Image (cartoon, rainbow, N blue to C red; front, side, top):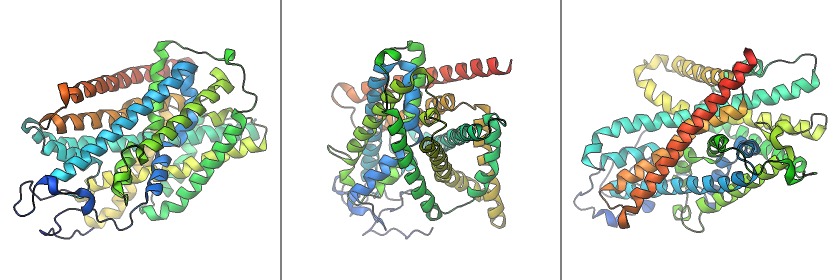
Length: 459
């Protein structure tokens, strides 16, 4: 992609790339006079309503169907209030990331910055001791982003495989196979379709996936809200030792921070993103409400028998329920390619300069094939949807959604003021403690459960 050379009259980078503009350049004015919103050249800006739906879609997906299983680990009451707490923390971390991105864009005199460039610019313009770490930060954030996408797509693989097993076990009860076999069957079609390299060709698949998810959600609600058992049939509180799996699952379900910056950067009216009411707050209130309701009533309906996706608990002998299982498998199947687009782009950006131009096509094919194989291998290694969601949420989604925004805001504010009584520092210290709690306890609980389950299965 060719970029126009900067000029004094229009000295900004519309694509969020590295800026060559210094902060004190003569003739431009102070940074307080620069409004990034006035320097965004967006070819096809998104309306406020359109941005709302994009952000809503990023937070609603297979994670919504996993919330009843998350409630199983805490019980009804902690699960309900825990969902609200996770939503508040996730929303706050998105808020501070976007606010920091806007502030550093103003200082660097660029229209906008993407997630990675925001982090890099903060370190480059932060405390002198931290400036040499800017390159490391770029690598860390890019790999964290790729890890979120690859980890999430591994969950998709096991989600699809579990749905296929559920369907085929009903139609062919005499031929039952382990879920790992279905993961292997998915390998070839996933490799072939992941070779699509242009996002515009994936738009029809995205529309179809959204339609399938909507129908699945309606059908799931139809069964969930029928004949709900008495509250006495479920646990109001469960052992605190099981709560970490709830936290990591809830974070996996709600975190859509990897798409937040693209959505905000392409808004026609970016001032409508933050604030009250704003796109972010309205979206997260709706998301938290849906997750709390689905988690609460799904757990009430199926109790401790609820599976990693509530669709797996739907009746096997009813056409409507069977249609929902098929549709959700198709929806996640086509969503897989959309989620793979970002990590493929990140990795290829890093690899292409190391490969001869005449071998770029072969290099892309090999990279995409190996990446798909990696997601399938991870799914086969942990062929339990509920436990894999917990592990991926604890490691990848918490790092991208909690750790990085908190660190970036702290570094940015360090020399610019941490607020009255350094409240930003204390607040972020508490958020970092929460991140460490999720990371350590979530990993420990997930890995322990995985070892116990598969040790008892195979030995």
